Amino acid sequence: MTWADLIVCGSAVVTMNAEREIFLDGGVAVRKDLIIAVGPARDLRARWPHAPVLERPDSIVTPGLINVHQHLTGDPLLRSRIPDRLPPGASIRDWSLPLHAAHTPEHDEVAATVGALDCLRNGVTTVIEAGTVAHPARAAAGMHAAGIRGSVGTWGWDVPGVPFTADVPEVLARQRDVLERFPAGGRVEGWVTLVGHDLASDALLTAAADLARDSGARMTMHLSPSAADPAAYLRRVGRRPAVHLDRLGVLGPHLLLGHAVWLDDEELDVLAGSGTSVAYCPWAYLRLGQGVTGAGRHAEMSARGIPVGLGGDSANAGDHCDMLKAAALAAGLVRDTRTDPQAFGAHDAFEWATVTGAIAAGMGGRVGSLEPGKLADLVVHDAGGSGWPPAVDPVLALVWGGDGRTVRDVVVGGELVLSGGRSTRVDEPELRKRARRIAADTLAAAGITVPSRWPLRR
Figure (tube, rainbow, N blue to C red):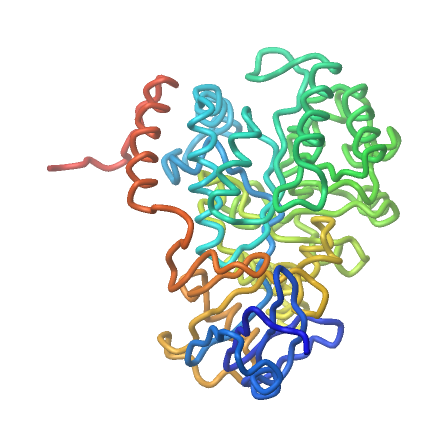
């Protein structure tokens, strides 16, 4: 008889398999780092009577959520400190870049630990780092310390006057080093990462795409969160961004584009024909006032077969990495902008946060659903303390009535990394002390004083 190392049981188990089955009083059996069975809890208990059981009353078990665009360094130590009433571009130019430039290797590691742990507390088991890391080995160490799955990259741009810029050969050498240090398939894997926007030469864009394809790695970059990118591309090359990337041969199944809000019909056509994926970060566009309600077409992308996943962006743009809140906002924006309550709903958005997000991250065969043979990444949500009725439709309850505060336990690769909302790996009080010290050091090194719009009294 085979053995099971753990059985996770819940009042409902949302599998996200091809049939989208939900098992009431269900369970997930785990051996080592893989799921070996999913079904009624009574059957799994009878089959493996000696296996340890993780069970909470009134709980919903889901796949680990996927966050396909999150900055894990720079901002996590300074969450929500960048003012929200700044001119366009000032939050990046005057705040984020100086803060990143002030980071030491220790700062990157502590920030990544804080960011990864924050993701886990919100039920995120896989996070795609957006590529603004100066010391990728230290950031990966922070991710490993927290126990999360994901990717790591490093700064990639070749424009003058910005931190960490370099010529094309040096940028590629940095990217290649990350891929070699963190091979695909590991708990933390290396990606080719460019800053994107209009901040890379055509030579760098094409060489980076070739590196990703030749090495079998994934690639990510930012594109068109606001109208600034299309305007810059039209001035420089006479074509809109996605069309230009298509002409260069940059688009393809290896590529995950961050944002892709301001696209026209031709750009949607080239994305749909290329296999490129998109990371959608709705809270960031509202926080920064970038026009997603008028320009965003992510539901249309999804309907056309473009894999769309959800992201949190940075801790001073989206301000959190709660994928349930992101899913609710994503669904609400579609329904309201179309004035059509039948256009898109909780279940569509939950797919973006799980199985489709996994495809966008290039990990569709490994994570995103609870099925035998997939990695044992799963989340136990508390459905008892929030006044929810019995979860006849747990997805409806999670998306519209839940958020990251419902997360109690998180399993990554068969390991319980969060238990009762607390990390099993990280000394959280000590991490908080280090994070506060480093936040003060970073602000001082960057020469930034955080203002308060209203007077603070003691």
